[in-house]
Structure formats: structure tokens, C-alpha cells
Image 1 (cartoon, rainbow, N blue to C red):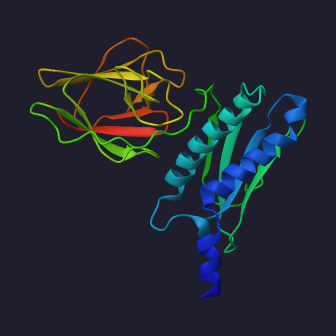
Image 2 (image 1 turned 90 degrees about the vertical axis):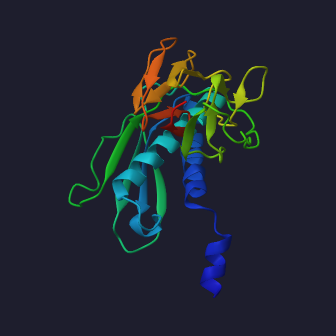
Length: 242
């Protein structure tokens, strides 16, 4: 009972890793540069039933954005840096973030182990904004296209597109706000014309991805049922045309 109560009060794994990333970058703040980050996580801390490689990939994506945002907020150079997530099957619960200085060799501490590894380059991120409450988009109107929420820290309801919808980070005229701090103010435009759905990146800082492939800005990209669209930390899937 006591152990269960302690676990309940313990910060979530993501919050622990974010704290570790923040502390690792803070050590290098006086150098005005950020180190590569290597993140070690016990497989015992993974959500049950989830693929290790998929979890490592998703967590690396989140932490690289978090690290880039922190570095940008503090005026620290970050070009070419990486965040690497390594899962270790040690039967002991731990999570540790290690900064790798530029002078340190990129040794492989898990060479003898069968562990998933994910590397992602850091990219410039949009300025941080306070999350907006998750909007309620309401029931789809006749002829609306439906984009289902696959993953998001802020959205809970699907996006319904009748005609044209501009999606962005925070409320402003003509923008459907998501509260995703990794989106630009006017990130992407969805259009539904006669049941044909498309998306256009509006020159966002972190780009728009269709089926995990970046699309050029200001070029309309048609969508088919089942296609995914990633904007910041938000992933949507087209499940219904107009």
C-alpha cells in the first residue's frame, strides 16, 4: 500500500525525463551551446502493452522538441544536436538523462545489449505559448470531413472540416486554436472541396507532415482516407471525406 501511494505521488515518467533534459542543458548554459543528450530508461517504466521501439521513437520526438524549446528560450545554440533514447532491460526502475559534450566520444554503452535506439536531430521550434483549453469542435455538419485525433496533449475531439479551416497554436481571428505549443500561430490550412480533402502548410516553423513526410510550404497536398497529418505534437488521421 505504501509503495503504491509513493508511485501515485511520483511525477510521471515524461515529467521526470523533461526535468532531466532541463537540468542537463542548464549545465551547459554558460557555454552558450547545448550538448547531445542520451536518455536511459528502464523497460520496467514503459507503459504496458506498448512496442518498445515505438515508445522510444515517440519519446525521443517529444524530448527533442522539449530540449530545442528550452534551448531557444535561453538563447543557446542547438544546430545539429541529437536526443537519443535507449531502453535497458535491467529489472530495475530508473530514468537518467546524460549530456554528451562535444569533446566526448560517441561510445555505445549498450553495444552488448539488445536495446531499441532512436536518434532525432533537433530542429528550430515555435516560441512557447501557454496551452489553450481543448476546443469542442461540435458535431460534423453535412458533408464535413473528419480528422480523428491520433495523439495530442491538448486535443480531445476530432476536427471537422467543411469548406476551409486554418489550424494554429492559439486563438486569433480565422484560426481554429489547438493549444499545441509546438505549432505556429497559423500552422496549416485544411480544405474540403466536394469531398476532396487537402492540407497546406502555411510556412510553419516546425513544418507539416503527411504520413511522416514533410510537405513543402504553400503547396496544397491532397489527403486520402487513412492518411495522417502531424503538426507539432498533434497527429490527426483522415477517417471520413465530405
